[in-house]
Image 1 (tube, chains in turn brown, blue):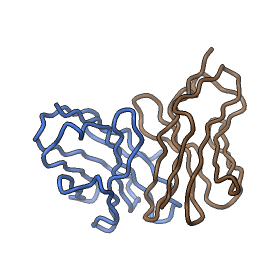
Image 2 (spheres, rainbow over the protein chains, first blue to last red; image 1 turned 90 degrees about the vertical axis):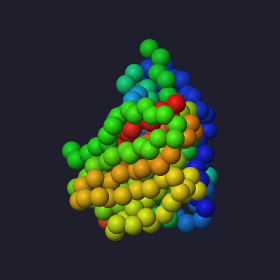
Image 3 (cartoon, each protein chain N blue to C red; image 1 turned 60 degrees about the horizontal axis):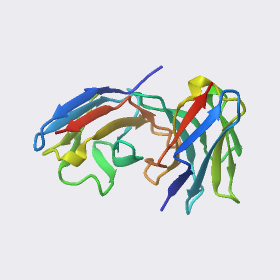
Image 4 (spheres, chains in turn red, blue; image 1 turned 120 degrees about the vertical axis):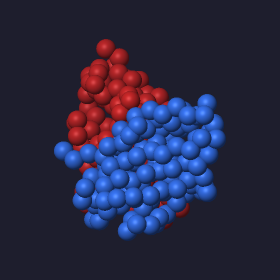
Length: 112
Length: 114
C-alpha cells in the first residue's frame, strides 16, 4: 500500500523567508510523487512531479522538491516566500490504477 | 489551456435527496476520477473510470454512489440518497492514456447536505 505523511498542518513564514513543507512517503514500488497547491475556493493545481528521472524537480512559481529515497522524503522548498504563495499544499503518491493518494495537506501562511 | 469544468459550483440539498454532480473532462483524456474533500480533511480518492467502466473504487464509494459517462463529454457522479456526512467538496479529474499519473483537476463542486 502507498501513503504519504505531511508533517505540520500549518506553516507560517515571513515574506522573503525560506519555505519548507515536509512530505514522507511509503511505497513498495518506485513511486511517482506530486505536489499540488490549492488556493482558496479553487481546485488542485499541479506544482511539480517526480517520475523517476532527476531527483531534484523544479516546478512552477519557483518551487522545487528533492526526492530522497534513503529518507523516503519529497520535501517542497522555495528560497523566498511571496504573499501569493499563501495556500494549502498537498503531497501525493501515485496509486496502482493511476489514482493519487494525498496527504492531509499543509496550509502555508505568509506574513508581511 | 485545457481545463476540467465542474457544475454546479455549490449545491445545497436535503438529506435523502439524490444529487448529480457533473464534470466535463479534457477532451483527449481517457481516465476520469472523482475525489472528495471533507472540510478540514485530506483529499480522498473515490473512483476511477476508464473505457466506460469503473477501474478502481475506494471503500467510500458504496452503493449510494454511481458514475456515468452518458455522452462523449460529460462524466457524472450520482449520490442516490444523500447523508449529512456526504457534505464535502467533490473534485473531478482526468488524465490522458500516458501521463505518469498527472491528473488535471476541476475547481470542485461543494455539496452541502442539510
